[in-house]
Image 1 (cartoon, rainbow, N blue to C red):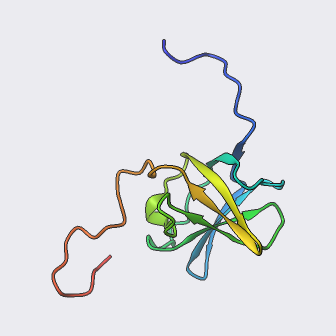
Image 2: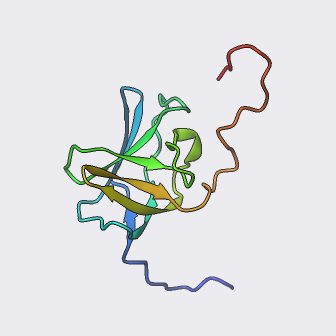
Length: 128
C-alpha cells in the first residue's frame, strides 16, 4: 500500500464552509482568519456546486462572516469560472493583496480535464 494510513494535514488547508450561486456569481466561503499576502493555501471545495449554476459564472471567495468578495483567478491572472472547478478537489492558491483588496490566484492549471476554450468557431454565437 503506497498511502500512509495516518498523515498530518497541512496547517494551510482550508475546507469550504459553503458554496452558493446568486446573481450570476458562484461564491465559495472559507473559514474566518487572516490570509497573508504571498502565502499559499490549499482550498477544498467540499460542497456540491448548485445545479442552477451556469458554467461560465465567475468564482469569488468570501472569508468567514465577511461580506467582501475576492476573485478566484487562474494561474494566468484571468478570472476563474465554474468551468474550471470541481467539487471535492484541492486547489493551491496564493493570496495576492493590493492597497484596496486582494485575490486568490490558483497555482498551476486546474485539475479539471476541461478548459474554457471553445472547441471550434464557425461565425455564429457559441452555444452552451
